[in-house]
Length: 563
Image (cartoon, rainbow, N blue to C red; front, top):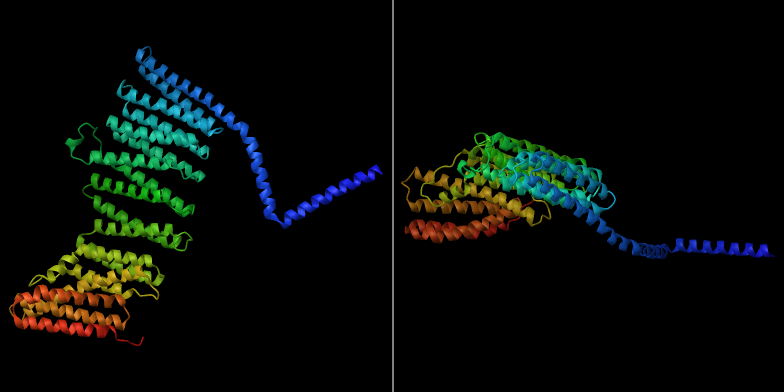
């Protein structure tokens, strides 16, 4: 009887367990909520006592840190007493500080707080020590002090490589960056500490191994940029303004900025091309700052061939980045890398043309490049290339002086005929506009690109038409201001009518808009120029042409053609 009751109890427990499991399977949300509540309760019970223990455990760490600072004061007392030679004491002080870095690394593997406090202790010892060894005792030179900073930067890099998210490495990198810049300013020995900062930037890249994205790399990058900017500011000035700084060879001054750019460019390339990650804003900005510093260094320290070398490098980089943009990033799910690399490639092409070629040749080259990228943009259905084409057109127009030429054509009695580069830019703008196709449902961005290309083409054509008409009339009569005014009105009338017809015939909205803009410009010109000339026959001719334009442009714009 007893055994039967025990068996019945055991069977009842099993049935209850089965019912709970079936209920959990049928209602997974309730089961998950119960487990979460139980887990929070268990964690709360576990953390009550350790939180007190952690607060108490900070006190021994602070005590050890104070002992370390006391040891530093003892070494300083030995240095002041002269009981030992200064150089061995300096070596002992460096070794003593390095032991604290090692201790910070070991403690940081177990506790981030302990690692941070020991790293802060090492920094509080190292900074004042280097300052006094250099500026007060004269024991260490600037190069030796920079080497010490580089040694500790290597130690910080090793810690960052071995330990993911190391707080000790964070403290060391930030403090060493500030320390290097401060010593460079105080000692007037900028180059050695810039080299140390470059080594520090290289060591901080070790964090890429762990996929970390912390603010310390930004601090190191800012310190390197500041050091290089100081170096360029000092040694690009006339010699009398940096008399207190050591003389340096210009080729030695050139390579730090180039090394920084190569380092940052390699990091971004690895991030985007190998790891396939999206670039961060600060990485993009840092590469751009490094490029500016490298460009200024080349232009400053290689004055004879700097522009040609820089331009050739920009053109080569532009081709590489264009290829990478469309082969690797065009179809990527995240569009940021494509936008960044394509923007860089367009900017580098523009800079390379300007630095490598004379202004007239650069304008012609940019006009040809605009046609090429617009045609490719149509074939690839890529609005980015359309935007690049418009940017190249505007740059070419500015390089050839298109605004000034148009102004002279509409203000001078006998304007001079433009050169070949002006014809190339006008032809390129016209070809780019004709090649670009309007797609159904285009937004205001696409319409703006078409409008700008059309405006550049019409500006060039208007100047050519005015100069052609004035030149033809000048062969038959002696030109006066009234002749030129009438010919300009005739040119504007012809352009307005032609644009209105083309806009309706090929359904190009921007052509129609520019036609109406030409009508407005004709009205202003009639008031400010034609009516002031005082010759009635020419005024009558101008008013007739303007009236004809007012009547014909709206009618042409409303025409419908079969397509």
